[in-house]
Length: 221
Ligand SMILES: [Zn+2]
Image (cartoon, rainbow, N blue to C red; front, top):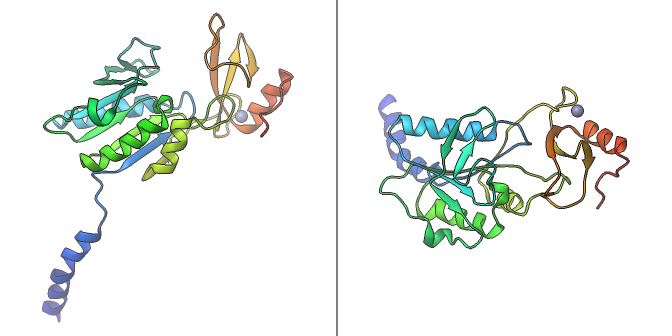
């Protein structure tokens, strides 16, 4: 009986392995509102790989130049230098060179990438048999999906939420509330030169309350 069972397992094992999805070429989208430690999470994953002598590539859009062009910096103070900057004109399938050994690609501030770049990352996971983990915001301060984040929601194998609490209460934060010179806003350009901008993770209730206090409507359809 035991021998028969072992024989069945031995016969079925190759089939099982054949149809078990590999984890090596998955596209991940880890999203969360501002101040949810996304970059800290990314740097921690990079550290884990590198402490095992594994190779990771750190990518970021050139649009994000808050901490110096190629710096990936967490609010906690930890930072690393990006290996590759993605410009608007970058063709990832041509310009990104695969190292001899590569175990993972990590992308910071992925919401600033175009849908086209996201599609290219999807292809690279398959062409290079490598996992790509993207970190970024799901929606902007108007509660709208970033185009790159929308494409990731459509194409990612794995969508994971990085949670944080609302700055105004103890609920889970969902939105990114924008203040310009201390006043909550839902319109205007993404970057307003000459103004002091700040962003806060908020729940729906606190987001709506802040807009009401600023005499501003919740974004409509
Ligand atoms: Zn709240």
